Image (cartoon, rainbow, N blue to C red; front, side, top):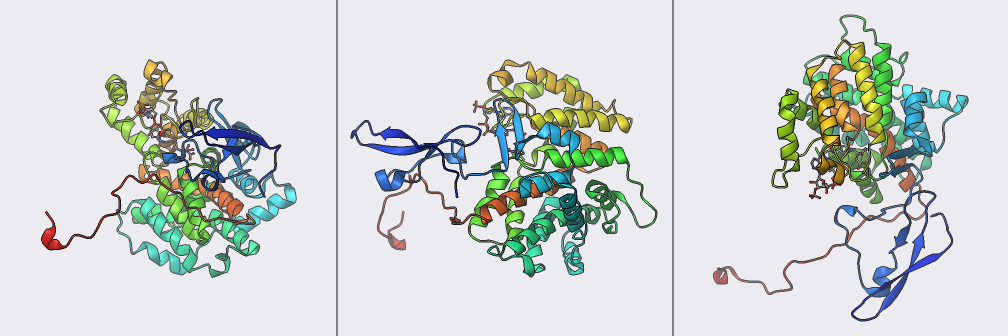
Length: 436
Ligand code: SDX
C-alpha cells in the first residue's frame, strides 16, 4: 500500500467556469512532492497531458532516488559513489531486489543461487545459429531473453512469490552467459561455459574472451573495473527501459518477456545505445582539431547532431556515474598502457570545451554515464556493438527489482495512458466511387 503522509491539498481552478477541484498533495521521503491526479477525471472530466512523462510520477518506488539538480544517485539510500567503491555488483543486485545489503549468510546464499543458475538450457544455445553472424547483439539478446519463458515454465507465474523470486535470480544469473554467447557467435568462436570458480564479473570476462584451446587468466584489475561498470549501470529509477518493463509487467506478461521489452527500449541511441554512439562520435572526430565544428553542430537547432554522452532528462548537473566512469576509464587505459589513446585525448578535450561553453552551461548539459563507458570497454577489448548489451546485463538487476516491486503490489493496475485526440471528428464512410 502507498505510504500514507499528512493529507495536504492543492486546488485546481478553471478560470473560465470558476469550477475548482481539490487534489491531494503527497510527499515522499525524498524528492519533489506530487499531486495525486487519480481522482481528476471523475471530479472534472479532465485528463492531464504530459508527453514523455517529463512531469509525471508513474509509480511509488523505494528502490532508487535521483536528484538531477544535485547530481545525487541513491540505491535504497546508499550513494552510488559508496557502492561503486566498496560493494560488488552481485551485492548491489541483492540490495536493489531485497531492500538492503546482505549479511554474510544472505550473501553466501545469494551468490550460490546466482552462480548455480548461470548455465542456460542446451536447447536455447541452438537459437543462436538461427541468427546471421552480423546480427546486432542487441537484436540477438531481445530474441534469446524473450525465449527464456519457453524454457523455464516453473518461473513465469507472477502470482506465485516463489516463482517470481526464481525468475529474478535466473535472469541476473543468465544474462552474462547469453551476452557472452552473442559476442562469441558474432565472431564465429565457440561458446564458453560459465566457471563457478570465478566471481560474476570475472566469469563474464572469461566467457567473453576465453577460448577452449588454452587456459584464460582473468586480469583482476579489469575484473574489478567490469564489476564497477556493472554497478554504475544497475539501476536508474523510472528511465525509459525500466518504465517499459513496468508497463509490460502491468498486463501480467511473464518476467522474461518484460525484460526482453526492456532490452528493446534500452537499445535506442537516446538511451542505452548512447555509449556505442559516443565511440562512433569520438572516432569520427578523430583529433581535437575537429571539436569546434562538432560543438557548432551540436548547438545548431537545425542540425540533428547531438553530443552523444551529453545531457540527461533528469541530471541538470554532472551525472555522478560519469565522474566515477571517468576515473575507471583512466585506470583501465593506464593499466593497459593506453593512456595516450588519441580518442581519450579527444574525449577529455571535448568534455572541457563543452563544459565551458555557454550553450551547454545554460541548458545544463553535462557528461552522462555513457560518455566514458565506451572508451573503457573498447580498451578492454569489447566491440562497440556489445556496449549496450553490457548495459543490459547490468540493468537487468534494476529491471527485475522494479518488476518485482510492481508485481508484488496488492492491487496491480494495468498501465493504460490516455491522450489528447486531435484527429478527425466522426464522419460517414465514403464509397470508392465518391472518393477524390
Ligand atoms: C541514459 O533516463 C535515464 O535515467 C537514462 C540513463 C539510465 O541510466 O537509464 O541515465 C541512461 O540514457 C543516459 C542518456 C544517454 N543519451 C545520450 O547521451 C544521447 C544524447 N543526449 C540527448 O539525446 C538528450 O540529452 C537526452 C535524450 C539524454 C535527454 O533529452 P531531454 O531531457 O528530452 O532533453 P531535450 O532533448 O529536450 O534537450 C533539452 C535541450 C534541447 O534544446 P532546446 O530544444 O531546448 O533548444 O538541450 C539540447 C536539446 O536540443 N540538448 C542537446 C543535447 N542534449 C540535449 N544539445 C546538444 N547535444 C546534446 N547531447
